[in-house]
Every structure is written in C-alpha cells, then in structure tokens.
Image (cartoon, rainbow, N blue to C red; front, side, top):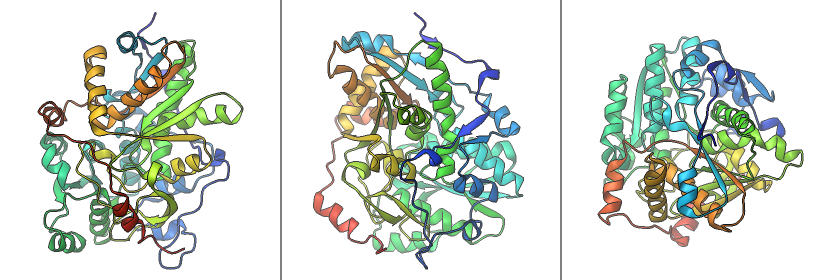
Length: 447
C-alpha cells in the first residue's frame, strides 16, 4: 500500500476552480455600508488591485493561474496526499484516513497558496507596499514570503495575543523583510481609540483588519491584502482540492467525508470546493467544517450582513457572524479567532451542503499529540481541529470502512509554546457566554 501519493510538477492544476457559479441559491453581493446598495469594483479598487477584484466578482468556473505564480508554487506544490495508516491503527478503525499536507510550504501552511497570487497581482499594477493583518501569524508569514518574491514592502498588524504567544512567527516575517506591529497599535486612529478604552485587550482579527485598512487608505502607494474570507482567497486555495481529487483517483479511492478547520474559511473551502460539483451531481459525500467552541460563528452565529472589521470600514458581507464587536478569548488557535465566516462557506452551510461542528481546545491538542506520535508531524493548533474531527469521524463506528480526507493546513513547529502550555495544564476550554454573544450580535447593521 502506498503511503504518499505524489503528483509531478507537470501534473499541477493550471487553473483555479471558482465554486461561486455552482452554489445553489447563489451569493448575496457585498453592500456599500453608506448606501446599502451592492458594491461594485470601483470603490474597492482603493484597497485591492483590479486583477483580484475581477476574480472576486467572477462567475467563471475556472480561472487560469499565471505562469509566474505557477513557478513559485513549484517550490512546494504539488503537495503530498498521505494515508494516515499509523493513526488508523492507533484508533483501531477500519476507516481510511488521508490528509493533504499543506505544511510543506516554505511558511509551513496553506496560506502561501493565496499570498503568492495576491502579491503577483499587486506587483502587476505597480503597488509598492501592502498592509495586512494576521491572527496566528501564518498569513503574515505567507504574505511576507510572497511580497519578498515580488519586491513589495509589507506591513503586518499582528493580533496582540498571538504577537505575545508566537515570537518565532515574528522572526519569520522579519526574515522575509516585513515590518510587524502588535494590534491594536498606537500607529492608527482606530488602534489608539481601542487602546484608550481597553488597554489590556488581547486584540482581534477584526481590530487588526481595521488598522491595516486605515493604513492602506492613508497612502497612495499601498494596497491591502486579506488572508481568508473573500472569494478570491477561496479561489486560490482551490488548488488544494484540485490536487487532492487527482491524488485520490491515483489511490483508487474517493472521500466519503471531507474535513477542514474553519476560521475565515479558506483552507476548508480550498480542499472541499472542488468536490462540490460531484456532490451536486448526486455523489454521496459529506463536508464537515470544524470551528473552535470559543469562536463559533457557524454553530452559534447569525447569517446576516455584517462588517468584516471593528471600525466598520469594510463592505457589508452576507455571512455567519458573531458580530463585528466580538472579541474572542485568547485561545492558541489564533487563526480561527475571527467573528465572521467566508460568504462562500456561509452560503454552503445555508444550503446544508456543509455541516458545521465545534470542538474544544483541549480535545484538539490531545488529537494533535496523538497525530504527532503516530504520523510524526506536529500539527498547528488550528490544524488540530481538523485532526480532532477526523478522529471523531473515524471512531463513530470502528467497523465502518469509510474514507476520510482532511486538510492538514499547517505544521506546529513554530507553535511549540502552545504545546508547552497544554502540557503544563495552563490551557482551558472556553464556552463563550450566550449573553455575551447576544450583546455582540445586537450591533449588527440593520439591512
């Protein structure tokens, strides 16, 4: 039996797959927060290059990957599909478990799949500087790597709690030439305002997005880049699932269930979306999106128009949201601490194509340790959520020979401080209080 299923460089997909035209019921458009009318590309071009906006609005099912992007992808793509035989044995299950190893990228996660094309399209339009936010630091590292490839300056607003928890993410960003500040910072109006009101805040992705956007709006040479949520990010990540489909075929297998962790939705949608046309054609396949119980946008949020940031500067997106004022607890899966979910993932949950699941922090770390002991790779705290869900699926009925595919979105070698805290008993599970959720969602925009 083959452990790793590998594609050659010339077998890498040359087009991304856009799931938007295939979503039953479609997507609701982003709205201009001032007029509450659908927002066209003109206003958004202040912060995004037109090449990316064309992808954001596209109804084409397939979009060509530029040659320059493919060349950089070849540093780590195609990524391996691996049969987790040792994990299967440890669980005593007849299920077959496969994982797509996105931890092989230079930055250790799937984030580079979108960072490279985003930097490329900015470079093509003469952009000299890009601002962004980062939760756990994976996206910040990926964009720092990508901008270094295209000669663009990069400024990263890193959520305070992760800035303190993950020093080596900062080291990686510095190595690629980026500038990093803890968010909220004293460098923006919104940052200063939040620090004055909540000096001990752990920060949030919503705050960091506000800071990065304010910075980009204030300079002519600067655009903004987002590492998840938006349609063009989901598009770029589809290369994961496109490769996985080819590899599953080579293995003579097909998934009964596809799993990924969910923060903003990019890695999960990346592996799941290329299988959705098969589902719509009648193939039996389940899609499970796993989120932290402490930031449960899909399982406890509301499907509504909301801002993507605290300062209310983004377009209004129709998504599952906990409210743009939501400040999640400082769990160690920092990449999953976002108040909203990708409109694409939200629409697929609305259509009951995706099943959301929430899991607790401690059971995820336990799953990550088991995975490390059996398969040898230490998962990032975010990825532990997908590992945990795969274990839940594989042990529902130990005699069910189902095939499970999950996205191993990143390794945890720069997250060992989180594991240290797990071993020392410093980590705890968080249930977000219902009254706090209600308060946060009371401020949703009235549409």
